[in-house]
Image 1: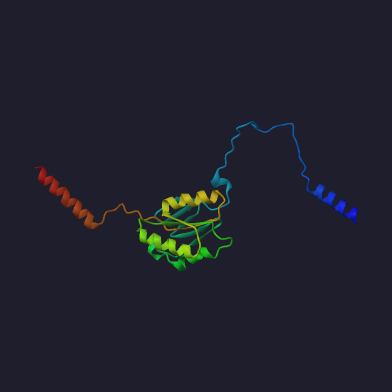
Image 2 (image 1 turned 120 degrees about the vertical axis):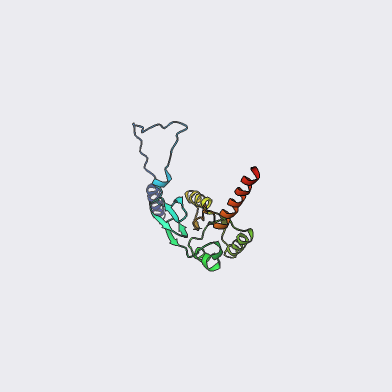
Length: 187
């Protein structure tokens, strides 16, 4: 019995021993200060966000997703919210059923938002015990990519930004009347 135990230990030791190989030829610079580089979008199989547009999101696999999304490291779902006002306990419940649980949830909101609304969202996420970051969507995309590349278990709920460069009719009328008044006063 003692001999069998010793043979078993020797066998296990030999089995666990690594085989090392040394070559005469070195490939590239192997000295101190060696620098390596990894291009994230080409080597990572995770889904990263390349662009945040008014209509949706351009991904690193050249796909374009229209509208609000719930994004995970290897998948994307259409997120059924129209704006920040539509985010509630039911729409956030999607992020509570994940296994393994999230390290952090990044919420990217489409426009400027009030502190009270952010406080409400944080209260809901605290109830679910989910750590979170609530940011403008352009910033949230970068934060999501960064956390994913760190190896964190992260997901994001993103709403495309609202970009309003076209003034409405009342702003145009006000601007025109102000310019006319300045012109009259200058003469």
